[in-house]
Length: 395
Image (cartoon, rainbow, N blue to C red; front, side):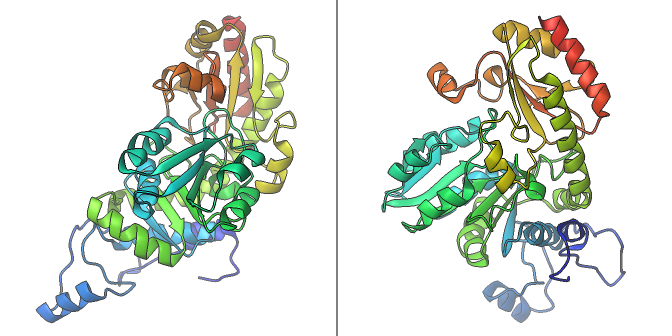
């Protein structure tokens, strides 16, 4: 592979391994184990496996390795470890590096399962977790003490779409020797360059935009080769959170069209945000790529001016209005995934963030009228017309 290739080319060709048959599409190695020529060869491989040598699918597999290398090249990371789901990536990256007595500083605005890992699991084993407003650098500055081991945040929060300044928070963390872990799923590998902005570890739920067609669960942890192979790999291969070969093949196929899909979806998301400005049924329209967003200037710097594929709207009339709106739609589906070819709408207060206490929902701005909209690949005008007619019925 050429180091001069642009991202779209890397997403199609990076990490390709061809067998002796010279296949065009990547091969699926559906095997959990591998055969050795001799007992001596087996002993040697267990002692020190080479880059193209495999032991057991939980440790690594040729198809999985292609996906790891391709997404690493796309992201600008040295290496990656593919996991069974996005949450396996989040929990694996954190748990692999933390121990009792360590301190984690995290943005408060997180996906519900991420909050559970931090509040319900890590603290159980003696890790101190401190939450801050991710958009307030003064809070980060006060919380990131010399005792801090790791800093964790979503670069764009779910579902209120707050944007965290990766470079500024990374500078604060690195000043005390802390590791910066960024869940980058809403920004996508297309619009974010988190590693060059200071992140040490970047995490994706490949279930979202990387697959992009609702077929498979998967995740990826990206970072330095030392962190991936010496910290993450030993933990993941022994605890069993590895990606399957078939899933890796699905994700490889998704990477080929990722750039085209995400750019088209973001274009429609911006058009939709424009169309909804000032609508009488809405209290708020939240889209990072729109000039009305509170951190729009940061988005221009951090995400090459693109706001991603997700926007959120807050309906007047609360849950009743939100439900009436959702039930009146004819094109988008009601589900809890995002980054799909189909537009997907979710009511976070009763689904993805249902278990959060009301006071935490209030702090995060998750109202009963809030609806998260993951924009798909439908015709933009059809989608806008459908959402406008549903809003009319919700009033």
